Image (cartoon, rainbow, N blue to C red):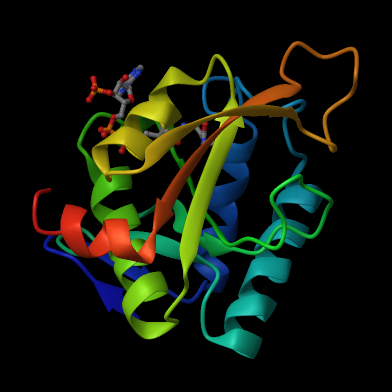
Length: 184
Ligand SMILES: CC(C)(COP(=O)(O)OP(=O)(O)OC[C@H]1O[C@@H](n2cnc3c(N)ncnc32)[C@H](O)[C@@H]1OP(=O)(O)O)[C@@H](O)C(=O)NCCC(=O)NCCS
């Protein structure tokens, strides 16, 4: 378990399944994803993440507000299992329920995930990527000190016909982290 001022990043619990399914079925949260998730697909995703945390000790952690014990979504590190032009890589990612947006929770949790990735896993680099129009997510990448790369790429899991296919890429190296972590 990891802890920030306001948040816990922890292993998934059975009670997270319902609020997770709710946010995965919310068109506002899923605006930049090809489709909403059914309850079954949402549960399967949570099961998969939980198993990865069990096996390797980290992945996309469930995020809980310490004061209220509310589950608000996930933030963490993940190894993509599909072909990307910059593989092998570890990405930092997030998805929060709409009611919790705008409080800086995603950057707060993501900075802890970066710290874990660089200082406990000793990763050389962490990346993040999103569809070109997902400015909210790009703001989080900027707030945590990631640098936008000039390269964009078509996401292999998004249909060639979809306007969501082209993605931008942000990177942060271990060296950059040692500098930026003191300036954020
Ligand atoms: C991206 C996301 C995690 C942001 O989390 P957050 O905790 O709200 O982060 P912040 O409070 O720092 O806000 C980041 C930006 O989101 C936008 N934002 C925040 N609250 C918002 C709201 N209620 N409505 C619309 N946009 C909002 C703003 O652009 C903000 O940037 P700013 O602080 O410079 O104004 C959240 O919007 C989310 O879960 N989105 C859906 C999932 C997603 O797109 N994941 C990334 C896929 S790669």
